[in-house]
Structures are given as C-alpha cells and as structure tokens.
Image (cartoon, rainbow, N blue to C red; front, side):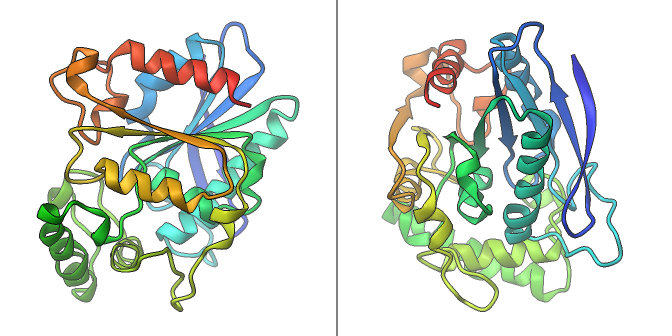
Length: 283
C-alpha cells in the first residue's frame, strides 16, 4: 500500500513523500534519501522491492524539488545544506514519531548519502546504505577525468549562479535546481571537505556517526561517482563500521549501471537482494 504523506520542516517547508507499507512488516523502516534533482517516484521500483521484503519505506522530495514547493514566508531557501540539516532531519523525526517501535535505516543515493554528515543527531539511523554516494572534491576523480570536474565545479555551476539563475533541466537531465543548491554544489566540489557558507568545515556530523554503513560503487560510473570518490566519502565517516562493494555490471548480467541504473526495474535483482539482506541484518 502506498500513501502520500506531508512532512513539515522546522522552518515551515511542506515536504511531500510516499509511504510504502508491507503486507507483513519485518519491524524495520527505511528512508530513501534521493540524489540531486531526482524525484521520489524514481525510487519507486526499489521501494516496492524492499516493501515486498517486509520493510516499511519512505521516499520524499527535498525542498524546492518535485512536489515539495510549498513553504512559509520565513522558510529557508532550497540548498544542499538545508536539505541535510532541515529536510533530512524533519523526515527522520517524522519517521521516529510514526514508527517509534521500529529500527530506522537509511538509503542515500549520491547527495542523499553525502548529507548524512549534516543531519542533526544522525545516529537515529541505526544503519545507512550508500548507493553511488561520493565525496565530490574534484581531486577525487581519476586524473584523466579531473579536467571535466574542474570545468563543472569552477565554471559551469558558477556561471549559472552568477547569472542569478538555477540550473535548467537540460544541463543534466534532472529537475531544475534552485540557485542556492548549485552554489553549495559548486563549493563542495572545490573544497577537500564539506563547508558551510562561511567556509567552516563540517567535520562533526561525519565523525559523529557510528552506525553500520555499506557503500556501493558502480564500476562504470565515471562521470558522477567513480569508486575513488565513493571511497573518499567512506573515509569521512571514520568512526562508522563500513565496507565498500564495487559492482561490475557485466558480472551481474547487465550491460551498464552507471550513476542512475541501480534504482531502475532493470537492475540485477541479485544486487537488490544483497542490499535487502544487509538492511535486514545490519542494525
């Protein structure tokens, strides 16, 4: 059963989510935190699969994305930092309140994994599964791919920001990205560690998290989250027990996976089953 839910953030944004309830619960709830500019409906095939395994699942749109556009006049603008500090916090708090008897696990796709380190009291997650979640400093890419990363973080994103606009859909094929989102994205890519708007490094939340973690990298994800970048993010969570798995599409019977293939219905069910087994046993 799928229900639409509304979750209010501390500063008055109305986040819209989808709640997947299993026929027979295994006592665990999983929050799927999406990638930059990716709507929650994209994660429905994977959410339905986990739901069939007995998990209660929650997907949602960050502020400024998809259906999450309504906000009070005093609400803070959509930015990557606010996605982590306010939106992920609100969704986690809502889940705690509605499923107080269940263990809560997280799934983070790309930025959805990065922002765990900015989420207040992130140890409310007993475990966290990262899918193509990466540390995006340009030097983390292989040398041959670094020029393209430099161009993106130092030129493309600042160009759209200076033009007083967000990032249009046609640039990356995702949703329109608000101006403050691309400012954070550009800054994160130019710094060796995540910083706030004043340049202060945000170490604490990354070092504070102690839940079990697993990182999946796709061997053919060269543009957005190559294994070298995934490994760099894993190292930021230095106090969390973790492992990292590199998925070779050919070894799981697929032509390609890249950055967005993991959550499609065409994804290898054996890999999905591995993640389900991990989520069921890791917390």
